[in-house]
Every structure is written in C-alpha cells, then in structure tokens.
Image 1 (cartoon, rainbow, N blue to C red):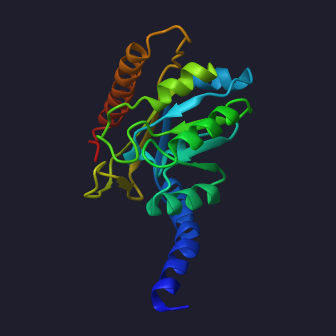
Image 2 (image 1 turned 135 degrees about the vertical axis):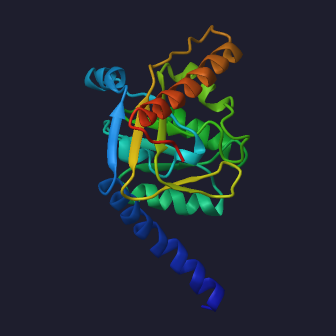
Length: 224
C-alpha cells in the first residue's frame, strides 16, 4: 500500500468516528433548544413517519436535534458524501447513497421502498451542488408518490465557522447556542400541481429558518 492509498484509508476509516465524537461533543457543550416540534411529534406518536427537509449547509448537526423513530438520510455518491455517510452511520442513522446528479434514479427508487417502512427520511433539497437554499424536485416527487408529510427542519448557531463552499457549510463551535426549528407538516396530493407544492415548500423552509433566527435573536444573539 503506497502513501496515497494509506492516507485515503486513514481518512475513510478514522475521520468518520472522530467526526461523530466531535459532533456529539459540540452538542453536549452547547445550549441546545428544539422549537416547533409538537406537530411532528404528534405524527410520530401516531406511527406516521415523515420526510425531513433541511438545507445542505446545516446537515452536520441536524441529527443532534432529532428524536424521532429513526432516520434514513439521502447523501451524495461523492468522495465527501462517503465521509458524511460513514459519519451518519456512527451517529445511528442509515445513509442512502445518491443525489440529483449521481445515482439519483436508483437512490430515489430505494427511498420509495424505504418510505414503506416506519422510518423517517432525511433529504437536503438543495444538495449536492446547489444553488444554495433553492428547492429541487426530488423531495416534491417523493412526497407526492409516498403520501408522506414533508417537515422543514432548520438549525442556526450563535458561534461557529462557515466554510468557503457552495453552501457555506456550517460548523458550530462549542459553548454557543443551537436552535433547531421544525415547521408544520406539508402534504402533496397526487393530483396537486408539483410546481405549486414546490413553491409552498420553499417558502415554508425560508419561514422556518427565519423562525429559528428570531428565536436566537430573542436571547440577544445573532446567527453565524
């Protein structure tokens, strides 16, 4: 095994468990608050699994604001996606590999099969390449064909770092405040105009994110 192969092996096998420990430590050392989750918890209580929709830049910490029945998360087939998928598994969730640009058709069929199981499905509707915070069609079609509710989920942090990536990926720092906000469940009927539902969901995502920011600002803090 040459040095390049060795470094790749170390990255694939050591980075994910270390990242999972880091994520748990950040959550443990932060003041975490979950708002707006009453409606989705009511669905969970009645045995109804949902589609959780969050923006790509918030993906790292979203599992720390989740207390549902278990999740399946759609993650791209890229090299970075491989690391994220392994990290997600160390956090107790299952990763479905694929995206709108690579392996999307097969991943979508797998998601439809998984939608028949009693687990939530997590999607980042602006991934894997953007544009940032712009809804794509995949989550709309999944909602329409599966009959599941889509629940917007947002995370804002008072301390952290934004990477210079297309999504300005968020890494919260410890000892800050984390606000996880859940929006109201939205259903897409099979005979409903998909574009109209897409616009409705886009606005719901924006509103939910603004609600999280407003909650953070109520403590005299600003969002990173």
